Length: 159
Image (tube, rainbow, N blue to C red; front, side, top):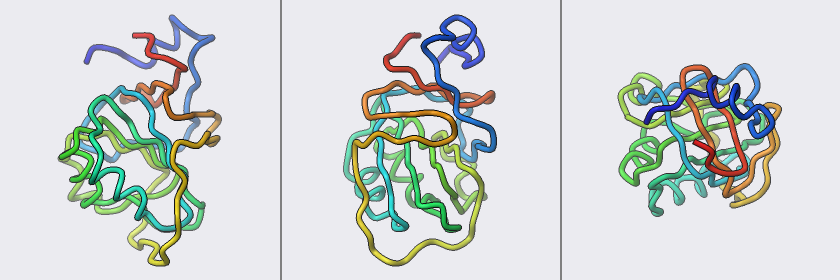
C-alpha cells in the first residue's frame, strides 16, 4: 500500500478533504485506504457491532459519527470483528477503549480519544447517511486514505 496523504493532498488539492486536528490512530496498522461506509450512532454501538461482525469489509473503511457524550463505541471485540471481516479501518468521531488490547490488531482506528466506559442503553443507528464532522463531509461510496499524517477523503479513488 504505497501512498502518503501529504502527497495526495499536494497533487490533488481540489479533490481532497482533510479530517481536522484532534484525531489519532489507536489501531495496529499505520495506514489504510478504502471505500467509505458511514454509520451514525445514538449512544449505543449495536448497529456498528452488526456491521463489523456480519458484513464483508474487504476494501472498506467505516466512518462513525457518535453522539458526543463521553463513552466508548469501539474496543477490543469490535476491532477483532473488523479484522476478521477484512475492514481496512474505522474512523470514529467519538471515543474508544481497550487501547492496550487493540494496539496489535492490524486495523487503523482513528478517534478523538479514549474512555473506559461504554453506553448501555440500546438505541438505533443510521447506515449510509451523509456525515459532517472534523471539517469534512463524508458519505458512503466516498474514498478514504489514512496514514501517520492523518485522514483524507475524496469523492472517488484517485491513487
